[in-house]
Image 1 (cartoon, one colour):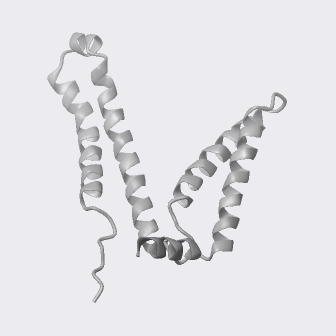
Image 2: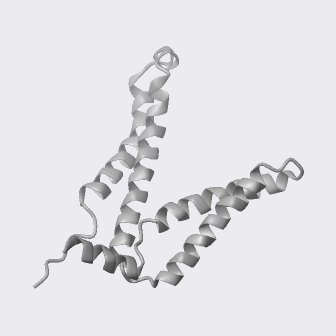
Length: 142
């Protein structure tokens, strides 16, 4: 019988939750423990909550990618995979064009959001192997 590998290492979501909690608690804790003068001189301490929450968001994104890739690898037909990948690439190109055109400010804002979401989507989608590619990888391992 084939062993099922876990969907995600348990340490990833646990560390994300710990970072979120520490990021939320560190600001009030810092305010209570340090004087106003110390807060003005220790500038780095003001960035600590942001950094903790930002790293927690990145770890959460990695966890989601890992789970979805574990569930979808080898199940998406090759043509559908290529079509979705092409849509993301087109979104990246259109987003760059929208951001670097000098005529309409609305296109700059739309281009920025299109570039952001197309890039995040492409990173996400690039971790999913299409059905034929998964079979090639399994043959290479044997």
